[in-house]
Image 1 (spheres, rainbow, N blue to C red):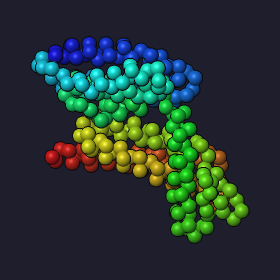
Image 2 (image 1 turned 90 degrees about the vertical axis):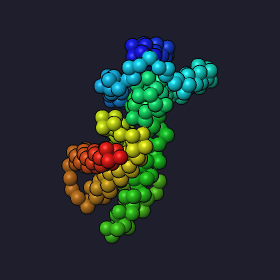
Image 3 (image 1 turned 90 degrees about the horizontal axis):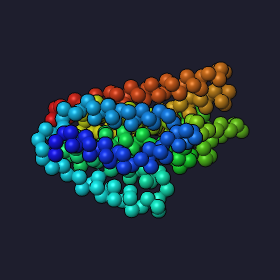
Image 4 (image 1 turned 180 degrees about the vertical axis):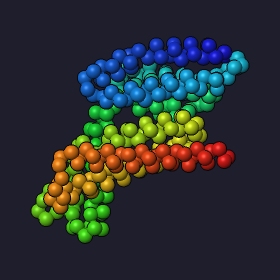
Length: 265
């Protein structure tokens, strides 16, 4: 299959998935998604444009069994599944088709990951994982505070100390920070052309770093909310920015290290 035919194949597949694009547009319009998620899709397209020279120039066959299987699953389950699972299948089909056409691989983790996180899932993530992330942040904050001699105790998604309750509210769950960490990891992996295994390692490390950074943020803000430190309200945002900058710098350093390991091999 020639390069031009590969491009037409992906364009045809994308056109066939028009119900997904319509659903995504509706979700973004009603506020269910964070409009930054479009950046992941734009990055995936930019990666394909940049790597067009890697596309095989010969007219050999393209192994499309995986995207075809995913597309069949999407079509068969269309009336049984809700829009989000259907969109996940559609993006997986588009990602694996792109991987096969551009890189001759079954799955390019960085590319497929960027397409998957481009879906407007922020509201769903907040609903399903927001509370567990707040509990994780509270548990780590509890341990850090006790190491500092403060007998704070976590109960649910709040910290109790000396008759006071300091809640870890929904905006402090770290969901947006976790999505941003995933986007940064996948973008760096695509830019540095990390292997799939190292891309997965970077994603895992990024999730851990982000959760730790969010826990440090919750711990820092406890001192303000509990009255240890008198500070203006703007400190909340400032602490969040500092913790995210720390997490982003750590992810970038890890990506550089993994890229060096790739080149060493």
